[in-house]
Length: 259
Length: 245
Image (cartoon, rainbow over all chains, first blue to last red; front, side, top):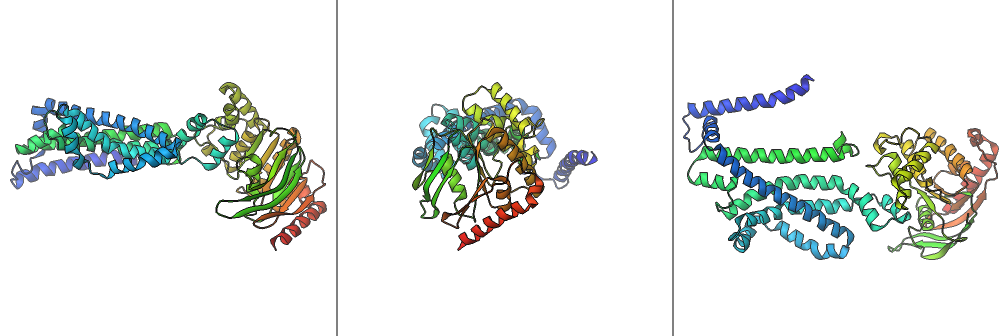
């Protein structure tokens, strides 16, 4: 009990100590505000620009969630196609890999020209989706192949239809893999959204990354920190939500999670 | 219930490895037959061929009449980790199109039959090795198969659990009268359980002996130490030794 309390209290105490030291050190060594603003200045930004920063966070969150949902649906659908047809996998998987290994920053200008001129948000969404899509596809594909071969034989022995085998054997066997992939994809969707906003470099998308660029150009370092803190919080929230989903779905039967 | 005839059964894999060279045997309906032999002699291959999970390179598997329902028990319990004991046992029935409620009812009865009443809702990870194997046996028997194929089902269990499951298997067999083809490494297990022991040679497997065990059932634990048991065990051991050369 005291152990658990300590594990909760200690990080908070450390955080408070660090923030206090930061405030004190900036004042003591007279660090300039456009190099490192004190925590109080960042707090002041939240008070003065809080509403507009939250609106930007909302825009980035919208992109992230849309990209994540798109990546989940398309990744799972393509993995199901791969599992049911080796030909489709042989034909399409090289393109999935090419999409994955090409740096998204390099694809960005092209996507921005194609769709971003009319609709900047769509361009950002497509770029974030490209980043988040691959881990879902790779993990779902691996998961669908991970079913116990003896159980596969058993399903054959009882003349299960392909649909029965898919629903009752392949899907549950793949769940631990798929959820690991979704966890990775959740973080990558946020990274993709930020990178895409940078690459699109346009105020029309209005996300947090754009606010960081804008504040940087004006040397409003405290505002950059404020936006950064919001991004970090979003990342933590996404990770926590997906970890909770994993626990919810697997806690009963999967050893790794149940422990 | 149909007899099962294996005639000149052979299986060579695509890699060129020959697992089974020539196996001819007739297994009458309701018989308890064991297959013993060294590792790699094609025992498991034979079971897979009988189950229709693999096709022979030569020879034939014939049943009198249509191929009957078959139950299969693997060396591992091979359970669905995400499903309760009852859902695991109900699988063959549900795959055959039975409604979930009716399938679960029969699955519960089958679990009771193998001594697992009260564990219907337990997940595989909550059960011991022996209990998981009982679930596997209940699943193999739930659809009332005419033949039960078992591939070293008790090899991973400790000796006392194994002896108990041997006794329970004989009880189920005498009650329900299905044909059993039982693969094992253990000479003593094969003698204790079966009416007939087919001894295979080393890879590629050939039939080197077909040894009858006339001891009557029920066989209890004392039978394991009787002179009759020893006589048959010696015959099987000698045949195994002869087959190694």
